[in-house]
Image 1 (cartoon, one colour):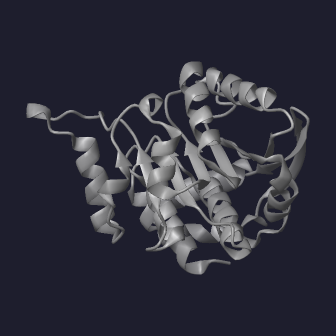
Image 2: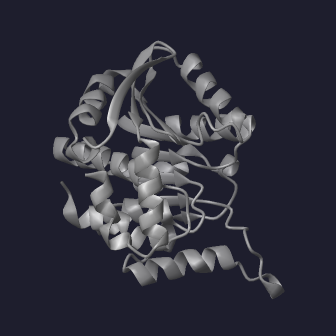
Image 3: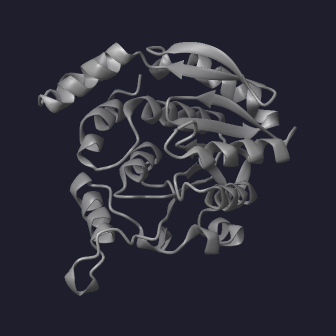
Length: 261
């Protein structure tokens, strides 16, 4: 297992406000590690940065040479006088974690106004593209099109908030994306919060990564069908989730990693 990065996931990363929990962080780690070992290169792009929890996970896994593109409006928490506190907190988190942000690789505007050639010009074709932007259908449609147009042949798109009843149009957008690209893209993995998609020629490869990754053996691997593809659903039992939350909230984060072994 990747002990150094696992410690980062279960300790340092939890100090950054955000929405990627350990199961998906371990999926990200397993997929990115498998790509590196196979020589499947490229940059990483993220729509919807918030305060950087997912961004800093990408930075930690990719190392100093990794090119991570962050796309966000950064319009949360306007301070008196118009100071942009979301962006300043994002920058401060990078300094605190020892993962300084390359501000040349930050796009501070609506993702609907970003073009694929701009992304490719900054990081090359993406090997991993995380979509966690606007939750309405037109947002997901635009963001998924942008991701597909800037994705390497071996690239992965991770859709956040799929099957979340609070944001039902995200799931509609994902389904539309796969139906419109039937035979080109396939879903290969699902967690409680995310669905992972790749081009069909790499479907078997990524299915095997999910099946065999040491960092994912703690999860129950269930098989489901989604729009013509067999998908590995990684089940994280309620008891484990409760135990993990209790340990974190009681100040025992240093030991919480053991819950996911």
